[in-house]
Length: 280
Image (cartoon, rainbow, N blue to C red; front, side, top):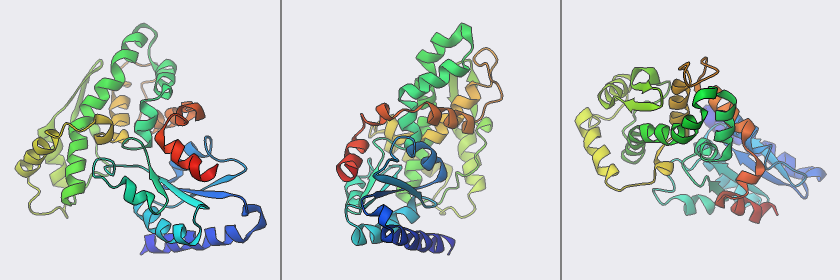
């Protein structure tokens, strides 16, 4: 019920904005959360574009069904692809003026940009910075891949697995920049915490699906969730031989990436080209 109220409140709010003379020549860009506002207002907001937010992807998609009909070419939505690119849903989203990230999410977008190097330059220990630059990001993505596959399985098969609030320390092990995931421990934890999961979602079933989805050889940048990668990076940076700041968590990693992310990086993406076609 809360999402329903939020969507309708935002719908009416944007309708009011377009009645104001100041918005006659503006395009409203709707994003799916406050962290996206912090990211995109620095690279998109201008005299012709105004950022608005709604709480989550599903409310954004619902909101844009209505807004795209009422204000064609005056409003667009930006959201994480999640598995939309892999599942062939990006074009369907675009029909309602919703454009998804080139890769899994905005965090992946930043992690494969020079913003990641800026983070490393700020926080990596002096003696290991070259090694960190070479191995940190690839190793973190490799480690996050199986968790990403589980998320993809859950998305497509509707298993109702609960990923919220996962304690990565329980199943992630690091030795310098070598990272490993204990899949058995991870699956036990996910099953234990998912009280509303479907009956079919046993450990054996999920493992069989991981193998099935892995055989598609899907791109890691589409499969891996950026928040998972950021959590793994944070664990690596809690080691004194790696980091100048051992009090690290995923929020600090993601905040540093947003600060380091520049408009010029975004302009190279397909997402930017699609937005530019609308906003001019």
